[in-house]
Image 1 (cartoon, rainbow, N blue to C red):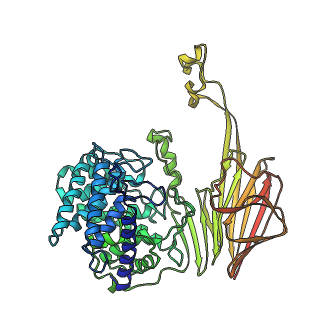
Image 2: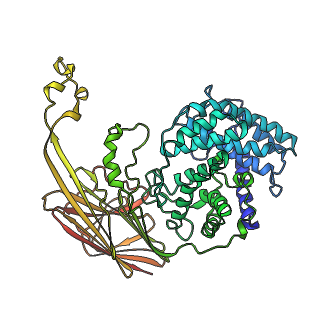
Image 3: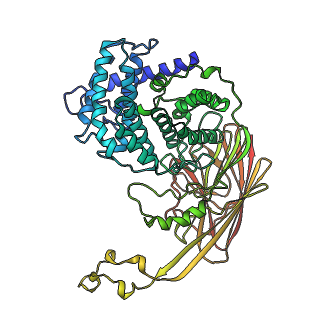
Length: 579
């Protein structure tokens, strides 16, 4: 590892240790030894909580260049933190995430993956104090084993977190039951498209989680085939990153949707895979991740601790190629998404899943353009179907909502064209007749018949209605044209929302303030600029006065410009980029 990158890791790590020393609880309570979380003001036994600070303390104690190398105060703090983790470990071997996910096997698995690394480092024969600390960690891991052998998941990535935890425990304890349980998870099959998209489509968080977990499992169970989806995703991410290492989150299926994230948590993935494959693109992405690195990550994906457990001494000597900068890239266009969605009825779950999501947008096509400082993203199966950047000038999202369903119109039926793409989507809404008498429950004959006891799924449909909307996106030289067209149905209230950053300056004679960060745009030119970059938009309309549409796109920390339409319509929005 290059000296400057290594020093950056040490500097970030020492800052984490300093924070931990200043915010560790020392009051003899059940929280004693925990490190207070900056966001919540509470101490949690989670992978991003006290366990993450334990990773930093361990790394500092074994890094000679750290100011905390073999530091007695840090060793004592690590001992107290380990006691906190043991005290917070439930009788069934699990921990609770903190505020949610109580007695959680997958959240315990996150911690186990990192605690195993802490154990390996502390087991170094050269320092007796460390070996004593290692026994505490081993106790935690032993207690966690029954939960890893029996515990379940919520989300798609949890399966692979549990699998990786089983592999880490297998390396330490060699219990064949751990491998057998992991094989049960792996038997469900891998959920990655040929273009590298994982189920949750989460470039900001869960791609990196899933990738690192498959790397751990591949190593622990000696299964090199588990690295293939990791390669695909890391190759895909080279087309979904900005020049400064920020990643595209505009179409995520998880909580990173529209939230700024960078490549920090891809650091270990790219470092290890670059060296393992001797891959020039991965090496270049590792450089970009290192430059963008702002945090070391949770205990299970800690940049310095992970580098110590999985050293890559030759990564700096791998040849580099340029990260793609001028391209059009289409993802998942050949994925049989519609065929698989039609098969969903055969699965028997009726589209119902608790504590998670079906993620039916998995495999939806995505198209990205990048030409230096200009980039655009066209998305299907998401609340927003278009986003655009011109340097610092950003159009974060373009979203369409109607009162027909009501709510967001997610674009479907993606077709690539010579200069962009076309979408079409059909919303359907009908009515429901009386439940057939032979299907009525006994409660229907009671003095009071609750609505929720009736078998609504057996009601016959009546008067089913449809609304079809098409959209065409056309790329020109320094400009984009968006054409949106409805069918001939009258009187459907529609709203096209444009989301811009709070700090972007918007002006135009047709802008009318409708609330904090809210604007109606009736006509004329709209100019948005930030720094030396700007974009000029033409295509305002105000055919109705509604500001808030039911189930429409969440505004978040953005300002929203509304184009209000009523069907039938054929509307154009033209965007010209200037710098």
